[in-house]
Image 1 (spheres, rainbow, N blue to C red):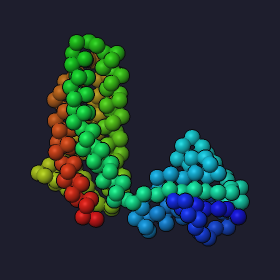
Image 2: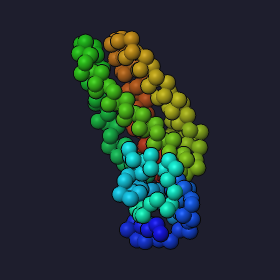
Image 3: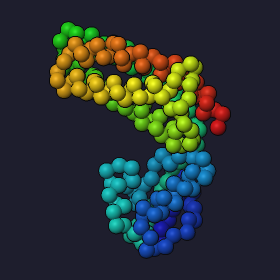
Length: 206
């Protein structure tokens, strides 16, 4: 009999031994959504489901597992925490972008490329967060105008300019990369930094 721990407390979720673990995981996600929580961690017999051991789902049935441990966090609390983190992160990102651009202009390309890849990862994580935000709250965030900023335009332009950065890096064009950072990416990030408090206010209404 499988033992299911929900934030450290044993819970009873009807399952059959012949069911797949992936079916149980879907039930756990549904329970979390109904409680307006987000699953932050799932361990299956001590192995992290969200990590490299997620292949445990492939063909594994309930009878093959002894324990599942699920941790959740309040949906709104977690989202607001991420937004606050983004609000703190963007000023540092902008300073980093300026330094990266300067490095490209003096042909210090090895350091510039290394730091740019980190900055791009940060921007991609931000785009992923916006996608998740829309899915969690079922809102058309991209159709909104927040603090006089058209979110759709900012969203689309950020994705376009990230692709342009990759192109400039692939052809080793330092000047093009620096120009993109100075004249395209920086204004976009400043606009996003401006509207993040507005997005936070929107989430507080839910």
